[in-house]
Image 1 (cartoon, one colour):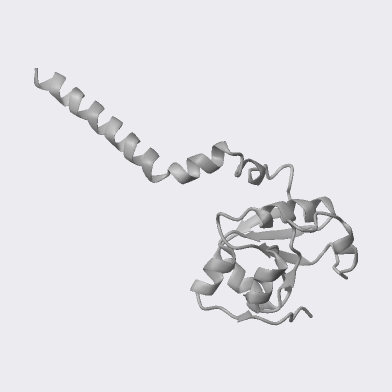
Image 2 (image 1 turned 180 degrees about the horizontal axis):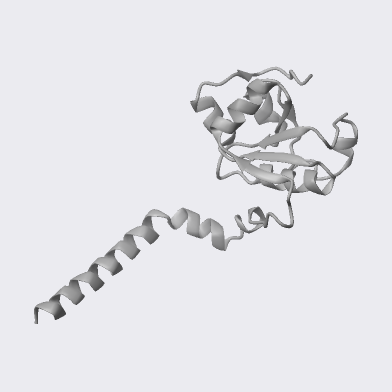
Length: 162
């Protein structure tokens, strides 16, 4: 009898925790079924030049001065504020090759691509595009602008691309 009651309590706890988990993550589940995240999933075999980096890794690359930061947000957001020295390639507005032909970037350059933060996908899409263009070292800073600003790291409101 006690064992039956224990099983019932375990089942109740599992059902209750599932309901709470679904409720707390409903906005993410909704976005997934709307197809928002499907494009950001990719295999490292298909895109070997792309890696995801943390804030600490992005900061280290920033201060090494051997890295080009690329802001994939719309130009208006870039002009409001961006990582100091970042180049703006608003990928959602310019999904074509000609924007890159105006730039003098070597495929050997280390590129750090970012957007608003973890819910923004334009940095991942731009990274895939850059991979297809032959760039060999592309880092996606998934925390993006939001995490950079919260950490108090160097920012600018001017078009300060080299």
